[in-house]
Image 1 (cartoon, rainbow, N blue to C red):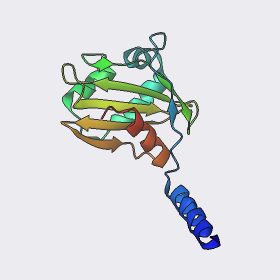
Image 2 (image 1 turned 30 degrees about the vertical axis):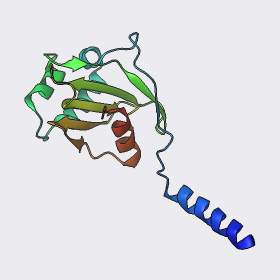
Image 3 (image 1 turned 135 degrees about the vertical axis):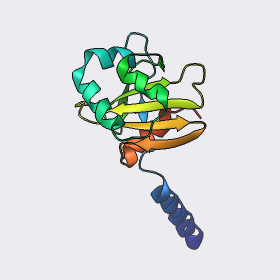
Image 4 (image 1 turned 90 degrees about the vertical axis):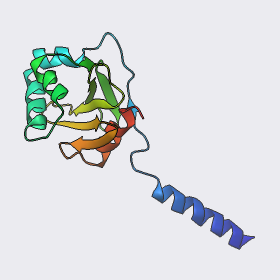
Amino acid sequence: MRKLIWIVAFGITAISALAPAYAEIRVSKEDATKPYLFDVTKKDPAIRKALTALFKGEKLPDWTAEILSGGNYVAGTQRVVEAPIAGAFVYDACMPHDCFDNRLEILITADKTRAFGLLKEDGKSRFLGKPDQDVGAILKSVQPQ
């Protein structure tokens, strides 16, 4: 019996150790009272600067240029990250008429100095801005599958 208890305890401990560190991701729901991405890119120079740095040197689809120019794209409202990186902001943008396969999830740090992205283009996703594990997990959690 003792051996069985030890095996069960060891198994539970091993499974717990394998669980990802980002299992507790919490991001607020979209809220129509929060600003949209196209609003903040016009009104907040710090966010505009962070996005400009994120996009610089990246090979991006044409529609993403519209994010900084205020042109034609679809955007959601700001969501606030509650865990594991409290205070960061998440936005989404997508190509008109094809949001499912051509979209960009964006995380702006709480101090608005850095931006990271998860670009889904023609069904394939890739990160922008070299996010760490927590940021990558947050971006994956908010991108529709």
